[in-house]
Image (cartoon, rainbow, N blue to C red; front, side, top):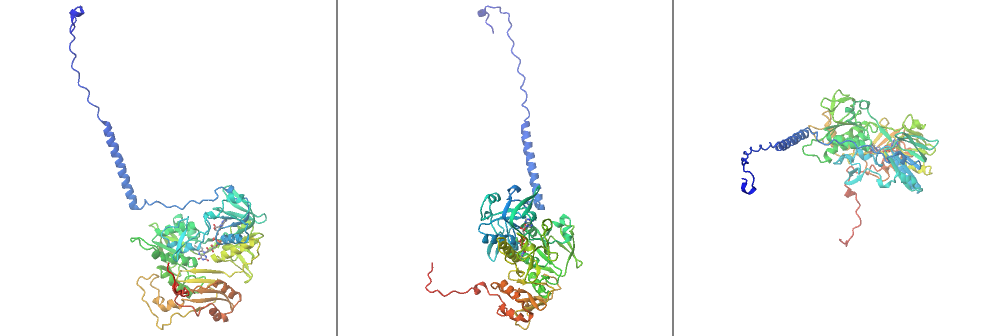
Length: 591
Ligand SMILES: Cc1cc2nc3c(=O)[nH]c(=O)nc-3n(C[C@H](O)[C@H](O)[C@H](O)COP(=O)(O)OP(=O)(O)OC[C@H]3O[C@@H](n4cnc5c(N)ncnc54)[C@H](O)[C@@H]3O)c2cc1C
């Protein structure tokens, strides 16, 4: 209220009425934020749950296992410009022959500069363990180590370590040897022997490398059956022609995932592979639920090693493979192959049946790699295959060929021979390497190789052998009991019901336990097979000397005596029993 007396103004102004009551405040907005938060939370949870269900479903179907893919092919050095332009010693191929040649060069020329080129993208390695102990590893082959265990000792397939080789650029810059370098994953296309140039395949054509001396050791490539070669990819993916580490890496994983594996062929490779795979079921620890893999070996003869030993021995040896649980299907061939309705492989066999399998090894031999011969204008052998070389392994001046790919003129036999085994390849490589440094060593060797089914059968072959040659077998009489001890064959004995129980008897088992097999050409002995004979020092050299003296069949008994057949024990003594006891040391001090 205004005080008129004090302000002295008119008092006509009406008092201000009280303001109306305030309207109620608007209601708070709907908390959409909470709805959004809850909604988002629920949808995220829903998505996570859906993903969980999806993963569980995949796990049930077995799809969630990471898919292994073969590693990418790596070239070392990566750029072709890093390859040396000219080298003193060039070795094409880092197999048995190439590696032996490198060792021989280093031995004879202390200032050598050696450059090795290999098509495979790994360091030089031994091939034989790939059909043997590598299969008894619990884990797939590890490309960094390639380890395996043989007779309780750990070995590696590698012949050299990465550190042994210089980088190609540093190698080229180095003025004086000794030096060695390697290019892996690079392929030599051709050689110009007139100008001493090897041409390496590059992305944009060829790169020349000038050499002073060159060795070609390209080895051989495995044969395949045409039914697999021209089959659809689904079939080809289930077939392996074991030759390289890459093949082994793939095959190992596929075999481990398979229930049924088939080995086609019964040559040395097929037999070793079948026996070691059969034993793999026992040698490698398996999960309780895992069923053992079934193995089948298919071959067209009555016995195994049909091209080497007579039928009766082949049949006897097949029992050793059967004993490891391998089903040996003799006198059978594979006529066709296609994918079955359940995604497996169906093989149509010559006996009118078909075989459902998961993986197939084709072990039907190998052909020499002679692709380089045409473009290099080098002569090949129309009969044996391989590059034609003289006794010093020279195809052209300063150009040598060794190993599986060489057809050598043998002075002893006055004929050409080609050997595709590890020992001869290494020996030829050594001779070629020595000759590259200035020697002129003749390569006059007898063909030789060894087949080992560790304990069950060890066969060493020296000289010319062939199933169509007349043979004389001398075997140690190991069964002195008049009555054969016949063991009843179990009902589920592998190998089918047509097998007579006699083959299980001790008499049969002992019949060809140890012996010597002589191969005849006219009346002369040209080849010897040591059948399960105990090891002997320099056996190969002794047999070679014997064969060189051109003995006749009349001397068979004398040779058998010389090779120690009469003294051979039927049962091999344990290693401890063979160990010579040293002089008895009295007053021995214990530490
Ligand atoms: C699985 C398996 C087991 C075997 N077991 C035995 C056994 O127990 N006993 C036995 O005596 N023999 C065995 N062999 C055979 C033996 O390994 C070969 O006879 C021997 O390795 C041949 O040696 P090599 O040097 O002539 O050829 P390989 O060892 O084949 O080497 C050839 C090399 O040349 C390379 N090469 C090829 N072409 C080119 C090119 N154009 N440019 C560059 N590089 C090239 C290849 O990549 C390879 O590295 C076995 C073979 C295999 C596959």
